Image (cartoon, rainbow, N blue to C red):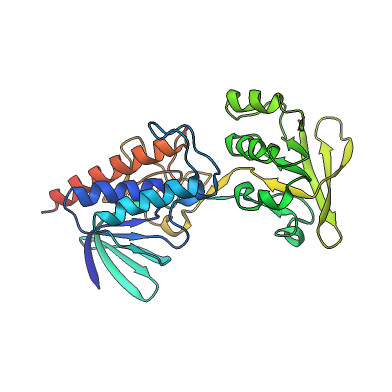
Length: 304
């Protein structure tokens, strides 16, 4: 069993920032990530609201952050954490066939996309239904698509797709969008973008690939068939926190309950999108990572 000062589960912006601050504090750490380092931001085509960076692609940003982490001597452990248990003096962590013991634990597991609540979603995922406009948008160049959602991700997806698709429908179940006003203003000026408000997608279908979406107005019950080749889903996220339910308090949405100090329980800290908070952006994830790492470092120092 390998012993470290801090175990960080998740290598998105929050987790990797925590790794930077923990390593610079002179601590030994284990940084775990099952999937692509960077988290959800990897799928973002362009970032333009992170201070001093100007414009940068999500993948390029993630790789630059990983390079910085690795330059400090931190080796990313590309394994899924299957167990995290409190033991005397710290926490037992299992990842693959390996076991670790950490004096402190930082949860930075982020969140995953929620599925489309429509008939046919399973059959047509990968054949017209996508959860990543950046990954799959180019396949629909010159075609008609729909984006489902009303938040920042949905607006960003619609903007990106509007640059390459013949038509983009932005479907939202409410009468107003939750996305940033600036992005909605940009979309409203696009001649190939149409807002479909107070509506939900009840069904998607087609032959070999998707060719239509059945949309229902939730106010009057009217139904519209949209001829689309693709449906991009951006209806929110579910935090990846089930592994830690026995260690920390989770709210009704599954988010780890913690304040701006990022303290979730004795010796446990949480950073990024899996924490209870109002704003979930790159800059707040980085801030959480720094706060959590410094708090964990202080905790470890206090244990002698």
